[in-house]
Image (cartoon, rainbow, N blue to C red; front, side, top):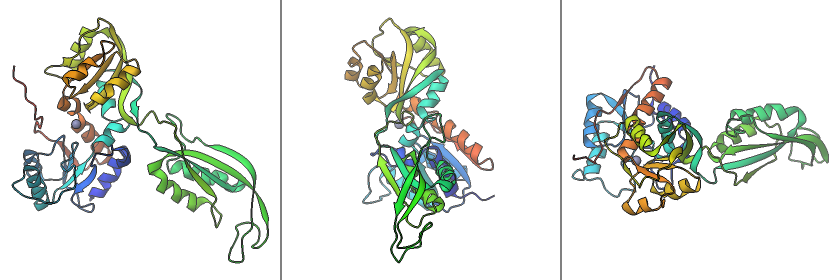
Amino acid sequence: MKILIKDLIYQLENLAPIEYAEPYDNVGLIIGSYNQIVTNILITLDLTENVLIESIKKNCNFIITFHPIIFKPKKSLIIENIYDKIIIHALKNDISIYVIHTNLDSIWEGTNSYISKILKINKEKVLIPKKNILKKLYTYVPLDYAKKLRNSLFDAGAGNISDYSHCSYNINGIGSYMGNEKTKPFRGSKKKFHMEEETCISVIFPYYKWNKIKKALFKNHPYEEIAYEVHNIENINFRVGIGIIGILEKEMNEYDFLFFLKKKMNLLFIRHSQLRKKNIKKVSIITGSGSFGIIPAMKEGSDVFISSDIKYHDFFKSNQEMLIVDIGHYESEKFVKKMLKTFLEKKFPSIFAYESKIDTNPVKYFS
Ligand SMILES: [Zn+2]
């Protein structure tokens, strides 16, 4: 069976919607073609020249990279420029490049969740929830059409709240209308005032699903002119955003915890703030650069904050109320390759997805 790049992208964006990426990020298909037939897939954390050579050797024409190779709009492509050279070579070899980055960080089963599982942490909620992602739809439909319409809205992705699906509120009432001579009212007659028993259905949904939900609404509502309202709501979805807070399965002292972390994450070394001589139970995590999470993690009463790229002065911020731990940027994200490989192999058993064998960590340790 031939699998096109757009088929892979459909599944990847079902997992991690591109709308959940941070505004500064550049995710999605950035080089190539949606209609290309996929040979093999290569998954990497960073796209370097060696990774591109590896993809050619392994006959991979689709590279998934976690860190984007293009961040800002480009005005030129010059082969002597190290990054441009990779782009030019990808184009010359018909290799498409796809970025899945902060959108993978932001989902409930994303990068932070992966570390939580390794460290046996029971997730409670997202550390910094993404704002303004929820909307509410109200629509008014004849009583005998309410069930069909409601179900179609659920199928399109409306009505999900944490572990609950099919959530809606329904009020029966009486709607009224009068169409002019150009109309063909579903019930009643044109130019005649009509009152109809209707159900007002209200459902919550993430904004990026609106097109799909609108399609379902227009397909399954019987009226010529559909009565509906969409409202912005400020409710927070604690399952979308950056970082995770959770409770360690087994409470332990700080020394044991650092040892456990080093072993479980296979780390060479750990940078950390001064030990507080208190046990570790509540853990906050942000994979990648996460020093902006120190204060939110403290406000949540975390015993430890695990992240990377923590600067010297940032280590003072916890004032010994919380242990700050830097495990390294690459080290906190290195499992992304495996995570995506497992996902793709489940969805596309006939396709081969390789984890790049190149260690792209630009930071080396001397001991
Ligand atoms: Zn990163």
